[in-house]
Length: 253
Image (cartoon, rainbow, N blue to C red):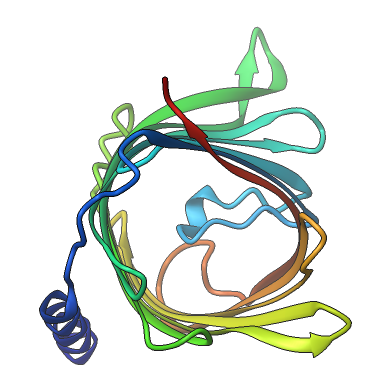
């Protein structure tokens, strides 16, 4: 844990030294983006929030330097999984470096068995959470990037659970040209997670494939525990997904 924190701190320090924020030449433009993902297995980096069945995730992003990014996760059966309302701010952004902060309230839905008038039933219960994040990324060239991410969650308001802390060291090799305008990417994360009084470390990887003329990206994700005591997070998990993305800049009048 100490070694991991030391590495993350050095990455954070190095990136801050490299950061230079240019003048904003697009103040009159705002971004509107939508992405919709369909997967065979709804996975969360916090195991207690994993759905474990086919799901769809819809993301919106509106803004430029300050953005509102709601995220709606729903099982393919139509039951809500989680609703997350991100507010993010770009502290620094250059062609190579980005530093962002964010916070969100969220509603997590869980199906729990209850007994009502002597009958066993499944009830969908909503729990409220709060979280904040800091993320930064440095792009060495068009292929290689390295980043650091930290998230702290306030825990369930209803259950008064202990805070969640997530530390991630990220790296990727992207924009790999495969011919006929197909592009691939490989991204990996080293994770330390502390949640509800339990801790664990993980490593995961994602392989992506897209076409320059297509808005659809195919991906395959695999997460392997290294050493963990977290309930529900001791087994490897994987999924495959297809994501449709729409991203446009609009000029404000």
